Image 1 (cartoon, rainbow, N blue to C red):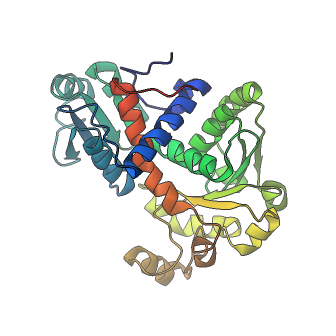
Image 2: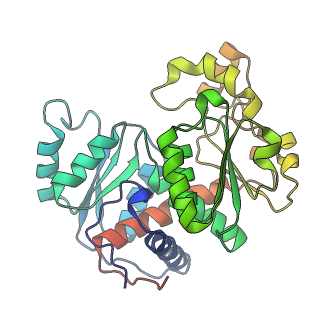
Length: 336
């Protein structure tokens, strides 16, 4: 029987295909339990720390609600609340927090920082996002795909936009692990790093998945089952807006691109927030400065019958709960 108790969740490349499927199956079970009001307070009395260098809606809410559903208390520690990496080293902080908490979530910039927390804390550490990887997002994404198609193997997911950000990296590698064909539709200037592509291709050889990196729209989306996009400018890159708008406008997800896929069963995913209109301060500012009212996805696609991003957002809670439950132990584990 697979057992993830005591493991940290830093990137999905650390897990076997069976272990990733175990987390997806656990999430399905926990989701069903929540919908049918079956209690899952297997970790009553435990407390987790949530370390946030970057702002968050879905990740923070998912960890808070997931922890509560499991009977735990979640303590939020923002970037101005503790001395992490400023007056106190990551190692020393990890050694302290590991004596006070049963698990630690980290959302920030540095992958090395979350790895150090895992190395020295002595408790499970969960990566809520770094500049390199976004593993909790991946479980929600692929659970949503599985819910819509009843399977993962052999499907084709096309990511459109900035091909070298943490979401693109994670989709490539996780899809390859699970047997999903992943296409990156991006300008050459933003193609994924060579080592990421090679890593994904290594997993793809084992799973039978196909990896494609292209700037050609027809080649990218032909036969696509899933179109996926993310913001054009990641947190910390706000000074690159003008450059990215000019570079990525041809890679916008719009109805013309959807039609190229020629698949009425296609679904659209977005990890959110999405800039599809000007109904936010951010959206209005971009429209005024750069003359763009819709960025990575048009409002038409965002509100269309293909859209599944709010299901995807809900699944952040169920999958994060599954990761915490599995790595803290004492949980019914489905067979995979």
